Length: 74
Image (cartoon, rainbow, N blue to C red):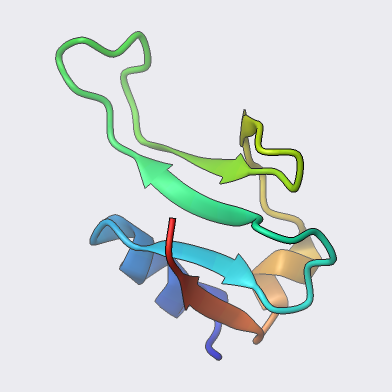
């Protein structure tokens, strides 16, 4: 397990992360880097929810300060 700073670095390299303390199974975060065909112009983080939906994600203070981040497979 590691801190959010390490998790962010891993996402910048294409990795997928999650918090061990999240209750929903299969939830994870990934960084999207826009390409020439994207409507977005800046990178953003999105989440796969426990229901399988992909949604924009915004970190809470608890997430930023959490030390239970882990690497996961998409």
